[in-house]
Length: 611
Image (cartoon, rainbow, N blue to C red):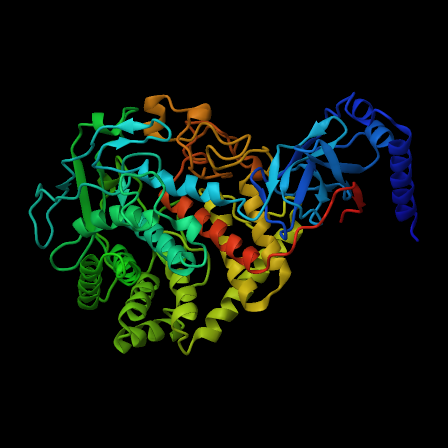
């Protein structure tokens, strides 16, 4: 037995003796506070059979270890009783934040209830253990899309958030093209506002729609309670899943952005950024900006998928979506080279969403990844082998094969890959699976090297969305291998988003005990919707070492973040962020429910030696 283990057992023995000798244990234990540390944990909670890890931040003082030992408690808030004692792990410095952390692994706790973690006078936020622990979170994030609607009045009976119908004149063609003169009116009202302001973008809308459709397609039957007709949006109680009603709002707008020749315009916004006014008060002219092949391809893929998923609910509308997808594909076939109609003046009041000094990924310099996505989804919907041949040719050609990485507006190809192996099993399925496994193994190594168990090396704009997508990849890999570390790694990423992070902050507004309260969001700022009145269900962008807005600290790793409404580079929401987080939560819930374990009987306190 090592000296360290002897010391550990001695401390645990002293702790037990102190318990037996003390008749008023609560008074003794919590009479003083260990002011140098804090306990952070997933504030929503855990499935009974999930990995459960809290972290003690900061230095645990020597006098605290002498008084309290190195054993923390799991406290049942309903029964007001300690149900588990857990030894803290060794202190570790997190390289991406500089924080000193000790892990508290209480995965053994599988009895449903509401708990807190306690050490000395410090306690965590409350969290729940239960089978449906994330249901309210999914509802909150799905409902956020209704609160982002454009072109209609929003009157939310749940939160009282409202504005009158807005941007009804969307939009005016910014410059002439092959079919229309400059200034032509394009009836492109509707859709969702995006990225905290009032712009609307085909690229993010397509990817968001595709991700939500995939989540529903795969889990709508397996987890019907998460996809009901009861979100309390205007379409609720129409005998159709509300998530599809909301997706249809986006699809309606996307269809209006397609030209008669199949090409699709990139985006719609004002020429200048909107001032801090509600959307119905904005009077500036809003422009439709040029077509491009990457967005046309993403449109084709999303519309093909919509045709497949919506067919049982809106047959004729699904046919409309498929015709639009085929028309977009025909345009792409006639224009085999990547083409983007862009001018610098296009970005005076909206994001570029093309390659730039910030966005330099290889996928932004080609459109073959987007064409692969479009061809794959068209094949899965139509089963026309012509599309499969194109998809296979693009995948198997080393010059055009798309990367497997996170699903984002820059690259929708990974979504097509996972859909293909689920629905079609093409001859290159094994190669897709190999790439998923390689990517997941890389993320696993990042998690193992991080004291926060954070699986993302690039702490840049939208990092929270990125870790949600990395977690989705881990879950795909878990399905292929049943390697438990992949499942636990996905839980780690969700834990980070929901409170186990340097700030002890749940990054989804309105969720948990301590959630982000000052999202950078034009409508919220105009209406004074901050603090606990913040628009609920929005995922914040997260830490960004480059911090282009100049509000949060730069080059501080995971601490390059501020819950500040001015920090658009760290604290803005975008519609594709939410789609990724919803995919993670639903997919993780599905995996844990497939492997549900019976609840343990923890009626007496037990001591577990932590990792």
